[in-house]
Image (cartoon, rainbow, N blue to C red; front, side, top):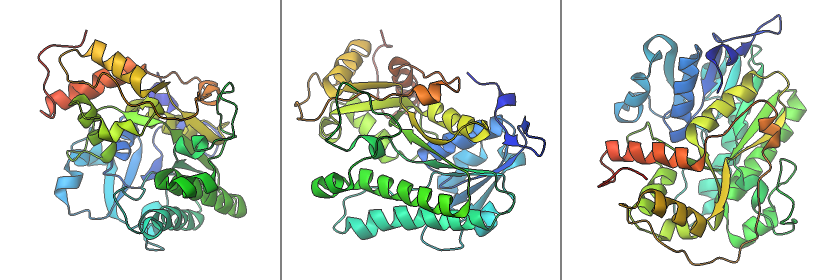
Length: 342
């Protein structure tokens, strides 16, 4: 899709080269690990932040990546400690802020999800403000910051001008969408006030091979679906899906593309649960994929991704993303198949 020579940091003469120094927060996570893989393959020098650099179980997969020995350094940083990211970010041309609070059952979502998302983002940006070498920040937001609303025309695809309703998220207790929405809004306010070049990426539900050995909640939900469980996927209703490699490439594209600005929806295909189940059951007949899901009373929507596609981006299909995901899960012995996909 994009040659490595196009993935680069901006130099003094306005051209692009693939030897820039960038920081990736939350380096050991599902998406961050894949982004670091792509950055290293493209020639970048990467500073990855983790909570505990000494935890080999969480970071070993990063150190095995091609180019990691020469161009990857892991440093300690904590989202809730102001100044914690200063050393990691200083001297970097770009910052990819991906780290976000882990979603789990919470008796106090405001303290455990909302505050870490907002304050963590602001702590990273405060460190960015101190760095005179900084050229651009790319923040990983979510398509949920655009689609958690009930006042849109279902005949008009949602685009980057759409924002989720804070009131609706609070009323329905959609804490993930609320945390992402408030964090992104806080980022825009801070960057506009402090002259920081910010671009945000809004991925749909991310599908693909997991580099970390411990599956994140997203990947675990997919494993459950492929094993015939409906509980986790049931609440999705209608959802956009995107290949993890596309999300990583999108981050790099909007970082290096001088004309990139604002928000970018990143989604390949939007389908409802029953469409997804039908597609997967036909493609992988040996897996006990649920045949039907309970119909949810959710508004119909599509996502307009023409802004990203105008930069030359092409998405992998939903078949490709699940093929790659399932092949990886089989290789890791997390699921078993008696036959290849049809």
